[in-house]
Image (cartoon, rainbow, N blue to C red):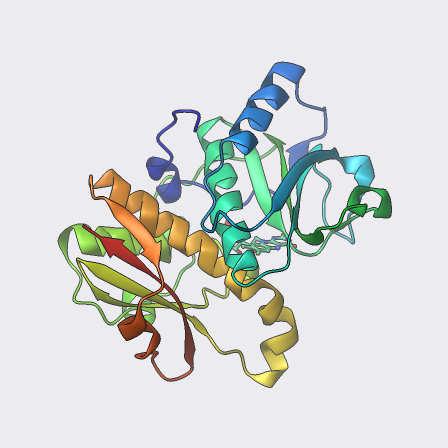
Length: 253
Ligand SMILES: Cc1cc2nc3c(=O)[nH]c(=O)nc-3n(C[C@H](O)[C@H](O)[C@H](O)COP(=O)(O)O)c2cc1C
């Protein structure tokens, strides 16, 4: 991993939708490639391919253009969407730390020639120089549910701050489909079971969203100097709150 502390970016990043369309210089793009090559997977047995493509390789579908996009292709295997969320969020925070804007893009689609691969297209991320303010300056600028709506954990101290990091995570249509249970040693993560009306749209993205929040949780644990692992936990899997499904747990030592 290129050594940048990504944790502080959680509290100031935002989706950038207005870009200077001038392509970035080759040195900057090389740094992005270097970062892509050092991403940490959540599940290391899933094949993932990330490529930088240009605005001409994307059908924008009404979305504003960006000079560059990252296209993510993955093996379709249990956990693959959560894995993609976990990996690509590392880049979202890296862009923020590097003075560049980025935005997850579920709606635009790459052109066919980009998709010639055995792997499945999952999602795009736009990036480039921002033509708007890059960072938020206060937590109050985040439109998010209160902690009490996404967790039943008695919060305070490091655990409260870690959940705050998850609370501020970006999600498709800002749906924030997550719920967290547990304590300072183990946090269990659940995603909402969407009702039929919202199912088609949400289902495509909620596991990606969960991967994003899990990465924020992991960064927070690291920030507090805790050894941690994301695991499947039997107890966590058997205690889903009503209306939610179990995804994974963060074991904190
Ligand atoms: C999986 C995913 C897909 C997204 N797709 C789009 C998109 O197609 N277009 C867009 O403008 N924003 C998209 N977003 C950005 C969200 O709308 C944004 O993260 C959310 O509203 C929270 O705002 P923030 O990122 O500025 O904190 C997407 C976000 C995620 C995580």
